[in-house]
Image (tube, rainbow, N blue to C red):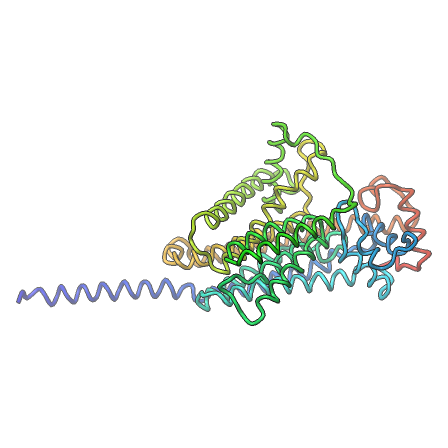
Length: 461
């Protein structure tokens, strides 16, 4: 035997042990991530609740005036269900009308029921996504880390007004019930004792999606796609399609129309595409010109990534898991809303600003990308561990929380302008800024204020 053989063998063994030790060390570095991410998620939730309190409106400004008046002054023969179904612009705000009724009966002002319902929806959305993650085939450490990230994505501070401001709450309601509809729709491989009942509940939740805003009507093609990729039998797919046609017909019956002009021209197409990528880039660049191009870049990346994910899942023939199907459904929901948004706003001046409240519609997109990518990230976890050091993730979370504080302060300052205008309006003043912060028409605003005093509305917060 060659005398060097034992030495060489020992060297190979030592090298293998060193590689194993290095791998174990790299993996061990990420063991603390679930705890760390959980701490950041808890801090983010604290900021979310803090700024919900800081952004509460003191008066029923803008659309809230119309909602209160519609509850108290109804056409002859219009009962409570007729009141709920009354359109508001191009929407049937059923949930908001019900919450207005509760608030006026219990609190003599609107707001508390909206806040409680909004917080309940946020909690239910986190629970629904958390359940999907926990039921996946990922290791426990990955599940806990992913759930923490999901909470971060579901509670960005730019969406606190969806809870604290009644007139912004319909956007949260639409997104929440879209998620509920997708998670309730069991695929053919997910048969359980109550699967058929859950699928019926998914159809009912899809109906409720449009009771926030009419943008929720896009859930029907999303639900059909999810049923198809979930390998449901054709009677279920046809039933969902039929339910969607009937509901959309009933919803849009006698609904005010919206004229769309110039969208199919070349400038209109360019403007539409720009609006879509700015929409998908929210909340970045919504108001600050400095962040407009970074927002466009982020929106373009979101559009490309979401489109590639959907095309691959639809035409590659590769099976997808339930977690990925729910995530892709959320992605498709946000992309369809983004695609339809220019039709509602391009009649305005060129370069029209994307409302910051639309930022709620990209929350499903961000959450969906997380759910879709989780199993890919785990499959290529060794590459991920080589690229991303733990300090990078910590730095990203610190930057995220810093941004949340800045956005929260900005939202607070904006709401304070509304509250200041409301206080001066109640005291008898009228200044030009009140057209943007109280109501566009002075005569109507003063008539509404007289009506509030007549019904003993709680005017001073």
